[in-house]
Picture 1 (cartoon, rainbow, N blue to C red):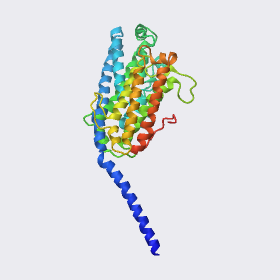
Picture 2: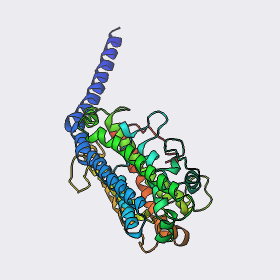
Picture 3: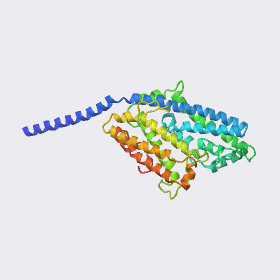
Picture 4: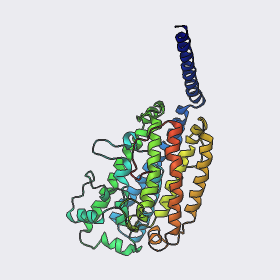
Length: 376
């Protein structure tokens, strides 16, 4: 009996020691890192400015669209093309924040899916123009958004004369004008809604985002991390993997499936997208103002500094591979004729998947709530 009592006491002592050790480790992490400050930095320095800039650029795009459709000439087309490039460039810094108002709501998908799905279906767009009954709220997300506008105001041969004739003398030119105006108006409506939630006078979402500072599913940290990761996966899988023929079921490259195919702005958008992802990891604003981000969060946990070193080494390798892509030919042309450097870029991005995905998730204790479908 005495032996049993001693055994029970020993077991209880060991259990209490284990519990105390786990509690201490949790408390150290919590005490050493303030997630609320991190979320405040993301909200004030990255997310709000990104949506505000996107809204302002979209306003300019709408004005340029009205000017061009009122007077389709070379000067107005050049202004419109520049406005589109600037607006879609601004979107690259906002495409990782698909939660809250920008997230899925009922049948409506995320902001990125609704306004930046590519490749677009030229057949669906042309049919909508012919019939004069475009619907910007149906399931045809490949017939609206930024890339549908791109299809109308750029072409593969840089033939602005042909583009202008499509809006002046070709069959259904008035329907084409109407489609373009409404497509841009739809962009503005969706972007204004999200910007108002973050930056509007009565917008409360920023405060809610900062206050929700736990790490469970549905918390701001979890939503931000998952959308950051989803954005990284989109860069790897859809902006590079699919055009290069790397996805499951593909038997060859499909260069026409690159982003910004008609304007040949693919490389520019890829570079901006990667820069935006890098900024989120570091907690840096678009103007390089440094703040508390995932890097600092990792510094607060055991094993975090080693992961930071590995990640930064690989981010530099990706940047080097990106800078090696020639600008003399479009990405689509290079995929067809000289894909080696793009293949290398895909490989370098793939190497970082482990660091952003499994290692960060494990060290920070944040569950991955989406599936990229690529087996990584």
